[in-house]
Length: 414
Image (cartoon, rainbow, N blue to C red):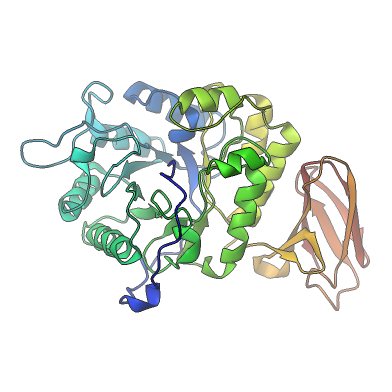
């Protein structure tokens, strides 16, 4: 969600609080799915049904996309007489449990949005979760919800207070009797870098670590307004590699593949976005998708799946790139110290994913070597281009022409 303002980072250390146990005993791979927020489409039961159906018919489900996550706007503005949450009766006349069954019957999973406070993030503050955590977690479990996005949404950003509230909801989910993936966003506060400054990996399954991503390549004016283009969001996420592991996923925000600037701006009228900008090119969108896979990030699409182009579908369903994101080692890719354009990510089985990243607008020749990417001692390697779907052999050097604002993504196997 949109952060509220860029204030000084609050003081405090997570180590000063009690260290809770890991959020789940299950292997936590990056979630794949769809979230309603970036689409700008009015959130209704019919729209969600159509999106689920489109994810099945387009091949997205079979490529691994399972979560269909309702962001802000699903709930009625007040609680029921017994204090329980309820769906907006006009938008979701059959309720969330029926929607979860619709998803489950088609091999999909349902996610939902909530906040302790709801101050400025798209839902009524009267239904905030603070003080209702146990009841709300049991409601979500009873509905058959599989994923919770829990958004801070409050100007105050005292770190110890954030830890308390996020931990209470985590414990309530554990006590609910259902495994629900727990995704938190501490950045939607007066501390826009809370996800970077503090280690949340012992509290959540997934943690937002960047400000809101918009469909732009890299734009200083946008950055000054508190939102990020692809380049800035990727750079922010780079310092968090140690927090990516089998129990925790770093989240640099949802994908903007297939989302035009006008569509995004019209769907987010309260965001300060300034003058219209050019849409991301196909090359930039492939680069964006490649970089998020190298980060072992959630791949949560936000485009209108019901009406996407063949090019958008081909990007989102590239199974070879998805396999890098879903690699069970859960290693986050890092740039080489000798050349920041070369990103490497160790994979299970001894292979290495390599992304040759060209941030400039002009074509660049980028080269590296088997030794540099960690395959020292190997005289030969198979180099698979994950976008061209072609194989070559390297006897030491890897060299490619990388288009402006592009990524050449490789899987190198000794």
